[in-house]
Image 1 (cartoon, rainbow, N blue to C red):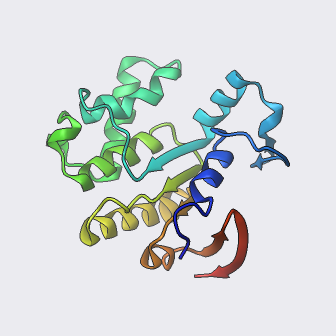
Image 2: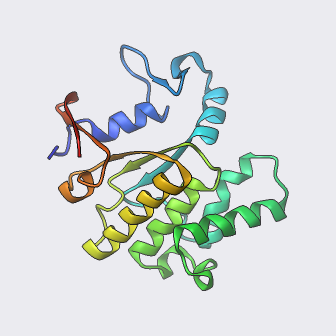
Length: 190
């Protein structure tokens, strides 16, 4: 499986419009990212991409619900509508209701990843970019997260692009792309 430095995270950052290529172009769902100015790219990203990272990137002083609400603050929504969407995303992600107001340090790693997933889906983007989403979890918690991602794909029709070192996680994919030293290698059905 790909080792560190093979370009997996860089590829996700390029697709998500976080980085710009030195050469060539990036086109996602019919949109050529280089043709968008920074504010248009930010709007495009907030509508089309949900990011899920290995290390969660939650704000420790905010509750789970407030962390999930952050992407909604960029949209013209009422407080009540934001609260409704946050509740729905956290419930879908499987965080018990009594933990919605816990801060990240009060949650387990698996629960923190559920909050991060809720944050990624709260704006209802069609594409989820997942960078080692189970890499910081034990096997049981990781399997629960993989099952959740599978549900998001099958029930909500989210496209999930996940990079991983884990053959078990890759084995659940519909298609596997091997990346080595920044080059796309073999494509295979899982």
